Amino acid sequence: MTDTGEKLETMGTVTESLPNTLFRVVMDEGGEEVIAYLAGKMRLHRIKVLVGDKVTLIQDPYGGRARITRRH
Image 1 (cartoon, rainbow, N blue to C red):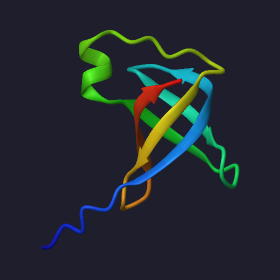
Image 2 (cartoon, rainbow, N blue to C red; image 1 turned 60 degrees about the vertical axis):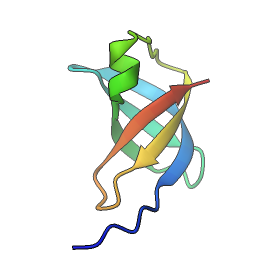
Image 3 (cartoon, helix red, strand yellow; image 1 turned 120 degrees about the vertical axis):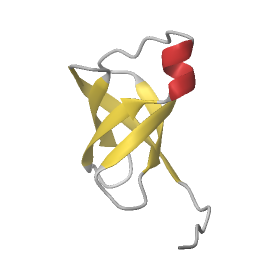
Image 4 (cartoon, helix red, strand yellow; image 1 turned 90 degrees about the horizontal axis):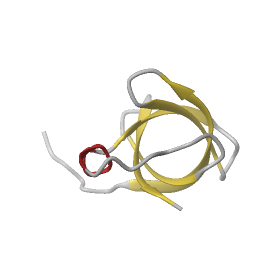
């Protein structure tokens, strides 16, 4: 199994807050809606993410979920 190391980084807007630090995010490019979770450093430093925030996402290469790595 090989790892290409390519990360798909995109921007999006949080539209809904779900339980267990999950968020529904609409991506700026294409308007696709994904479920995203907070990255470990954001949980560690207790960075709050609210509905309407612009965030940076790293998409899972297999589809499905994305990881929120930065709040703008």
